[in-house]
View 1 (cartoon, rainbow, N blue to C red):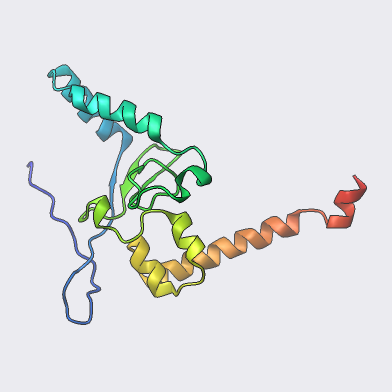
View 2: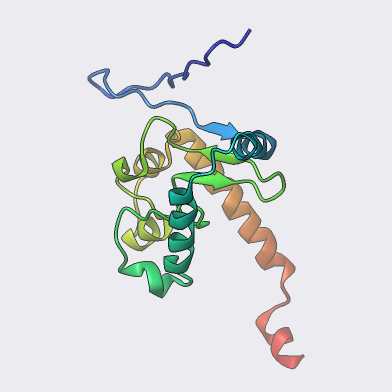
Amino acid sequence: MNEAKEEVPLLKANEDGADLRTRSKTMSRKEMARDLRRRRLSGQTDPEEDELLKTIESERPKTRADCMNGPRPCLFVSCKHNLYLDVNPETGSIKLNFPDKEIWELQYTCALDVAEKGGITLEEVGEIMNLTRERIRQVETRGLAKLREATEAEPPVSARKAL
């Protein structure tokens, strides 16, 4: 019953057929907590890991100005702008966007760095985010619709000045 799960490659490959991307992998908060409890109960807490976590927390950038000229790749994967993983705020589950790569293998690790780069194609964004060009287009369309709704709901500038 405990069979190892295989990574399922996406259907898309490069022109030469090499370097298939793999799908993102999501780990639930329960799964991570269960693993942590197992390690603690068996006495597998790592003092090196605890020390590393304290060091990382003390060195973590607090603002964009703190991290703008910081080392790249950015190793602070818990930052909301880091592209390596996503955390669902409602469930606490973690989605690894690049399960087949280590963070230092990524060309870009910060969404803010990509935004500062300026306009890029959907294909380039898809490559950075490990998504297809079509999925990027869908996300872009949904985001623009939300922005339109938000701006339509705001009172006009002249009405705001009167308040």
